[in-house]
Image 1 (cartoon, rainbow, N blue to C red):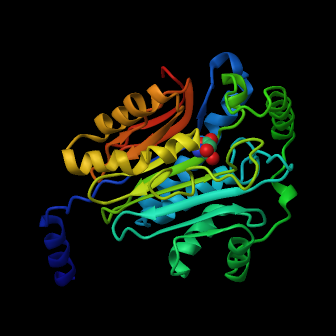
Image 2 (cartoon, rainbow, N blue to C red):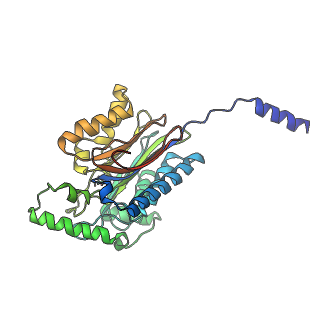
Length: 333
Ligand code: ASP
């Protein structure tokens, strides 16, 4: 008894070791998302799904899990939801199929994995994680990537399980416009809007490690094996414990050319700018003049979060180091 009391008094006298901050941010795509375009019911569905994904990822971090696992958990909830352009609900290609892209990166050892153009893997983000952890490669593509995922135990499905009526209609609409414009790449904002909706997450765990991940169906009516920024490390996804973690969404070609995710973190690393300054610069001063539309979620090792975008809206949610919760869709919220 005496010993127990002594132990307890020592325990109580020991100052509590301050836990490292944890934080998480997620996105469900950027685009011409306005209040007028969303019914109250749809808006509520998006907010509920964003909250579900955020809370599930945050719980992993709270329980001492890794940022890598939190990113996977948060993204898989959105991949399984028909609301987002990733997994179920992915946009259709010109050939009326789905080709899915995903990538993941860890901030402490700069390990990364990606898949592009997979058709049979149920969770593309899990396939990206598998490439990172179970192969010597960073990126696998097409049928080979599906085979690798299947051989390593991931669930394989028929491509049609990703079908949704809404995306089918979007394909028909985009196809008509593309044919009318003689396949010109410049489409009006309305049509472009149907092309986006990627999902992503950035996390900071109790060990102080950052991770970032992104998963997408790409752009509606894409052809010829087109691959966007989402599976490209440095363009759509980046994580470095010395600067920040980023996941992007938007018109992929611009994000690739401007190496958006890595550029933001490089500005933080080499110029000492905050993630807010660096993110705003790249989105508003680099992308906007080029008419490259979209946004990013950014997280730094202290648990600060910034979510800049130049489109009308971006599905987004976060819990920062102070526990501040944000769930937002439109520009001014
Ligand atoms: N960035 C994706 C791509 O270009 C699309 C998106 O974010 O919605 O494939």
